[in-house]
Amino acid sequence: MKKNFLKILLIFIIFVISIACWKKEDTIKVVFLPNESNESLKNSRDELAKIIEGATNKKVEIITTTDYNIAIENIISGKAQIAYIGAEAVLSASERNANVQAVLTNAGESGTREDALYYSFLAVRSEDAEQYKTNGEFDLKKIKGKSIAFVTNTSTSGFIIPARSIVKEFGLKDTDEVLEEGKLFSKIIFGNSHPGTQVNLFRKDAEVATFAIPKSFSIYELVSGEENKAGSTYKVKVEAVAPFSDHVGKSFTVIKSIPVLNGAITFNIKTLSKKDQDKIKEKLLSKETTDNPLIFGEKESKIRGLFAKQNKEVGFVEVDNKWYEQIKDAK
Image (cartoon, rainbow, N blue to C red; front, side, top):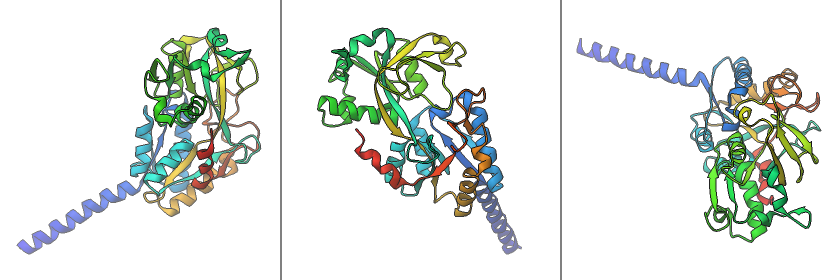
């Protein structure tokens, strides 16, 4: 009888473990960076979850974050099987775990990855812009001694890319020197998201800020200069959503603009099965997804998409980690 009891107990334990493993494998977790975690993109995140659920017939759990490092750790550890992360994060994450692989990015206006770019800005409040000029041209050397707001020290366009330009301009050893308070800047703060860093600038918490603004939906209107170029000035629209609704009418001027490769939808190929990888990839590359306004939204549309749709050809295109290695030479 004792033997039978132990046998039943063993079967029960195996059953419980099997159920736990089944539930784990039956849920796909998708993590987003802070910029894509804001409330205005909730419908778009939910739509992406529905697309993945439809492709795999599995439950999808969305993980939003307020910290870049948390998002990146989720995909590295395998706690999340899918992530949307920046170009620099693709490389740093894959260096720590080779199973983190870039799969897709949002195409540029050409419908290819050749112009799959956005822009990193070094910006100042518009009323102060003239202070940053030498002989009528914006001069990066003028930021010395100022207070500055970065996004986080792991953000591609909110720190790493603009910091490399600062290193080059001032002849520094590396980007670590940029963060030495008192060496170049009087004060250094972090906004923890691109919107947060822009708000730092408007609230006068910092005199200079580094960030990117999304192509897919803008709370700004371009009031002067050429879009995405040094000298362009952007003003917060009347209909701006939080946290910009408290800063309507305020503006910033770009003193340096740097092109950056679009971020990537990445898979942890160890924790996401090959079968699911293929199904998700096929669905995301489909015309149905390309035409979905919650995924690819037109700039003037009231429906906010995750990504910008400059024309009907714009959708996802295939990439890999090797494609992102070109940013190592970006200055």
